[in-house]
Image (cartoon, each protein chain N blue to C red):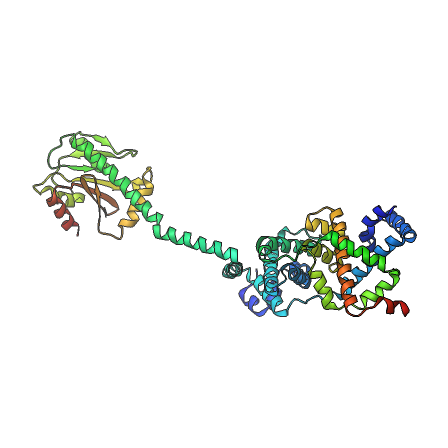
Length: 271
Length: 201
């Protein structure tokens, strides 16, 4: 082993991390070369100094206890949350990102996408009602007309009048148009037919039947929202659409927005 | 799962996973020292230590039983340090290794009898000065040297822990010791050690 090679093995020799063959070679060189012996000696002394004189700082007991406590607390959800928060508030960078996250969260709460969702449901529903009213209008029905999607009613009207009109889009509900004077469930609508003004369109949605249709989501949304209200009023193009729950039936009244009278009558009868 | 009543009456440490308690907790002093060396600040060291233990406890199932737990904990600490603390730390002045090598060669040519060096330097250098000298080392040298001399880790473990080849571990330790030798020699001399007097004895 020459000096150049020996230099590589000084540290392993000092630290006793050298394999047996290399150790014998290195020790042989050590005895022959005073310069390398000096280097070896210096490294040994430095190792000794570091090992003996390095002052180990004991971890303070308070800190040990605090850490053990924080570890035990890991088991509980709130404690875990607390320790996360602690980490967050101890670190500048995390603190910053946490603040950004909080701002984002607040902005989400303020903008409330859920509320928008509900509006979207109503819009969708209103558009269905509107669409049907448009289609029905073209049929030139008699002045006093009820439009209904109630299957029992449909059956009755088919047998008595034989008039079957357009289907609700994407549902299996048919819409029937028939001229009737009174029907128990429709007394509110019936009241309106006494008015001199234009036709009020009424549609019924059986909530239970909606379960099997593609409209389940929005009917559910509207239903849960309407349960706590007497009625809900929506403006949709030239129609005012009033939604209301009556004995598990979702009623949709569509009134031409220009006809103030039946609108006011309807509202006062619902209130 | 412990009952709530049990949890209250038992000291907190009893509630920790038993293996974690036996394997990981005893290394707290070593890790605290390592944290101090990394951060050079006792508050940062305390935070780093706490963070390390919280992470270790959370990922305890990832620890391969039977392997070196201390090395595992050191690795967690090093990674946490790199992620969150390093940016705050002022690195010590860059050392010109060639210059140190020159000084070392001068000392080498002045000191005729290496057998005396032991007493001359070892006895004349103070603990504070040793700490100061170690602190002045560049971080990558300091870490490797302390892992070796203070924590007693093998070169292989250090290489694994630092993600560097074993040859780099060797050369870093070698260089670190040379740097320290020059510093410590300087301190020993300034503390009144006199080459001539020592020769007379």
